[in-house]
Structures are given as structure tokens and as C-alpha cells.
Amino acid sequence: MRPQRILLDLDGVCNRSPMSFLKYVGCPVDDYSYRDYPVGCGWDLVEAANRLHPSRKFSVGEFWDTIDRRAWATAPESAEFKWLLGHCEALVGRKSICILTSPTIDPDCLAGKLEWIHSHFPKWMHRQFLIGPRKHFCARPDALLIDDADHNVAAFREHGGQAILVPRPWNSLIGTDTFQHLAEQFDALSRRELTV
Ligand SMILES: [Mg+2]
Image (cartoon, rainbow, N blue to C red; front, side, top):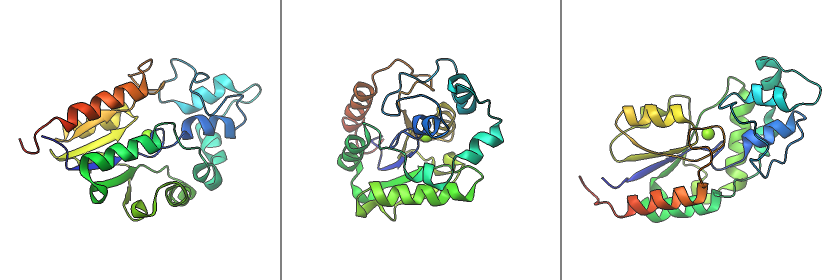
């Protein structure tokens, strides 16, 4: 079935927050590139920070305490962001796209994410978002999740939804060309029939 609604992840998909957070806490990384992300850290951003930082070792709490509202609000856009939004619009139309983003336990995270949405998305997307950690609650056969987390993609599929995993160095598609992969996925979806 061709998807008729799209749930679009924010962090690591529309923006570069994992890399910009590493820079924010003092790691010597280029946040416009993924080349500095330590291979083998997977989803463990704190472990990545501890491998990269020249002098500090963060506990999980210390690391996330450093990531304040400004850090969430000011993460740069990903290279794919505008392209991706355009392809989502072409596939399902403006009214059927919704941002779906999981917060940390810090209220500043929610505020920063909302700031990010308002300063980077076009106005027609400003009221099309859901913030919550259980993304699979949105799964249904005609729904497509676009996300950079293997566990979110797996759970969404297990609950009957469709999903595209966005290649990043912290997920199982490490080494895959992101634009090429996304283009192939969208091309395949657009060829599908509208109903089963
Ligand atoms: Mg993400």
C-alpha cells in the first residue's frame, strides 16, 4: 500500500542534533559532517562524547543536563531536510505530514523542539507535530515513519506501520549513502498502488 500519511522524526533526520550536541558539550567535531562520529558507539551519545572529549568524562545525567533548551533549539538542519520535506509533500500532500519526535525527561527539551519546528519548518507545518516517546502508537498500514533509530523503525513495523530508516553512522545503515537510499525508498513508494 502506498502511504497516505507520514510521521517525520526531527532529531538526526531533519536536524543534526546528535553531532551538534557533541560539539555543544565541547567535543572537537564538525557538526556539519558525520565523519567524526565514533564508529561502534551506536545510539550511545554519551559514550561518543566520552570518547571524543579531550578532558571530560560525562555521566549520563551530566551529559543531558548540559543539553539545554538552546541546544535543542539551535541544532543545524540536516543536508536532507528540505529535500525530504519536499518528497513527503509530493507523496502524501501537506495535510498528511506530521512531525513525530520523542523528548527526553527535561521540559526544556520540549520547548527547544517547538522552537526548532517554528524556526525551520514552513508555516503550514507549525501545527502538525506530535511529541511523545511511543512512536509505534501512530503505526497503521497506511502510515510511514521516517526515522534514524532502528528501535523506532522496528517497533513501528511490528505494530503494522511502514518505515524508512534514514542512514546515519549510529544506526544499522552506517556506510549507506543517505540521499541515494532515501531517493530509492521514495521512488519505490511512489510506484505503489494507493490501496492494497
Ligand atoms: Mg531521531
